Image 1 (cartoon, rainbow, N blue to C red):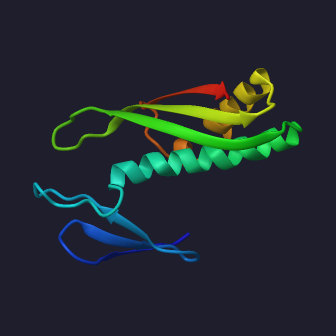
Image 2 (tube, rainbow, N blue to C red; image 1 turned 180 degrees about the vertical axis):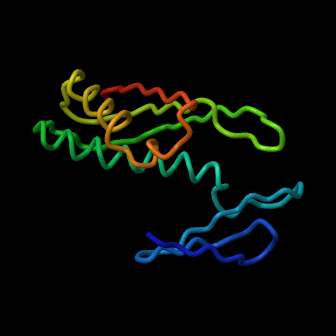
Length: 137
């Protein structure tokens, strides 16, 4: 896998270009009063974890023949200060599933996605505590 990151404006404005598909904007302004033009690198990490587990949850629920209509994930990261870095120490994913889906099967799908199948979460430092919750709407 190979991607390219290009600076496109200020010191903190970039365009991420995947091998295929559309580019994304990454922006982490440090100056007060700057209009943010895209997610920060840390927000992108959370979005990547949510996107990765979302695909897995959808595939697993389809295999379980669960009639899911829609999925929204709220993901929250709690950071800590270590020297100059501020890595995540906790990540919590809240899955909101619409449809006539069995709660136990939805919980199982999320557990498998978070703990076994998501390559993004598997790539993170093992000290990061990852938790999840599933709500059927």
